[in-house]
Image (tube, rainbow, N blue to C red):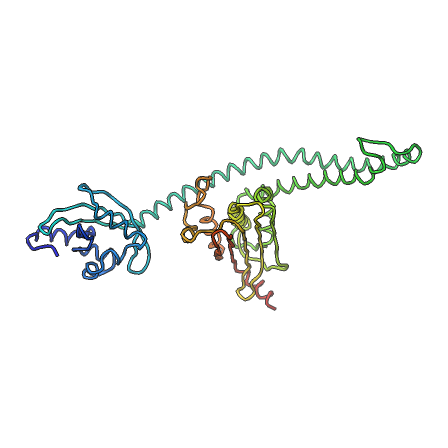
Length: 393
């Protein structure tokens, strides 16, 4: 305890609304604390003095914190560390450490301030700003896609129409060519013998038609993805259709990352309540994470959709055999702006936004991961009540 010779200083110390702790400059033991510090950390005066930093400091940061306190510069310097409240919750401290010469010898005075709420407000502000930027980007993308889709649709319709005409022409011309073949023997058209044309030309016509229809489906999927989602989150949704649409959009990206992709779905899945567009965004985010976790093209990625009748939930799982998630990262992957891919353009918002959408749909997300062995993400959504009842009959 501080000596009575310093009574005026003690009154200032005790009555100060700022949490203050005095430490021994040699051992880092707590010499004295004021009531504001006891209130901040949730422990009484005697406990603070007896147990010191061990009461509230994160064990992983204890040695570093002691080093900062013992090496306090003559002028005050601000530091940041994490700490545990008495209820076990974790928050962030900003503290200043300075050296004071007193009759007892040199002491270290530290003032503390909980800045956890301040950091959260800043993060929420950054997230809201990011949402606005994302919304603007999606709006611009929607206009661009609509324009491009229109420009592509016109020639694509022209191709489909002309292909039908060519197919009809071929039906009329081939009997004539076959008759000429019977009278004059085999001959070549475009380097292909006429004897093979009967099989080759229908395949060519079908290939053109199939390619044109694929272009049309891609245009339709892009339009659906960027279209403003006016449907409320209580629409009846077939999750299997949502996943199929997301996979179609991601087909090129899937081909870039893996040679082994599987997509399996149970038949007769009951519907869930939600927004197809928002749920599609979740699937795309999770699938992209799985693809980017791969370190080799031979590593597989799989999507499964099933029904847990006992829980009344449709279960979506996306698994990969990639790099996995480290234990220290696992507790932070849902935090906004936390990303292990910042150097590759990651924003740290994909999982955070996905988690928000899943909660909005009364769903839950969980992870199973082993570093070096891969990750499986499970997303569960409650089914529509009537459908759940029908499924259990």
